[in-house]
Length: 193
Image (cartoon, rainbow, N blue to C red; front, side):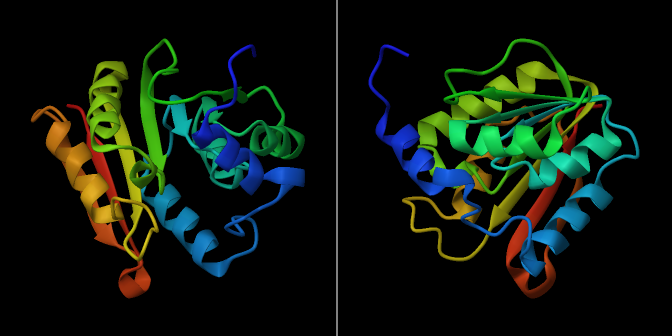
């Protein structure tokens, strides 16, 4: 890549350096409960899924059980290398992407945003909502999961989710809108008729 690494990319590479798991996705009870709740909210089969911000693949593993194919994106090469090492197989493709600009071509039955929206600017969130709506197949779903505690980012999880939801077309209907145990996160599942 001839362009210098963006500050955002450098931040994520540092977080995942050496195959690290900065949020303990693979071992934390919070993460494991959240992944189970998210998987339970989904239909039994989801066709083709797009997972944005897959990190080391902890939720990708759950998606692979329900989807015919998963396209898992992340900005960190380190995170993607760890995910590929754990989960390489015919049902998943891992790809580096700097979103929203590197939005993949194609259409999807499921698009997943798990605890990543608050890392984007308001304008980027509106852009992501438009791209998601355009790429969602009829009958498709959008899964939003947002941490409700302190993010250390300019936007809270609730603010980021509200921006995204407000930018979505009115035809999308809410199938699930629930808080996690203890109110730590909010899970919203939208469906296109």
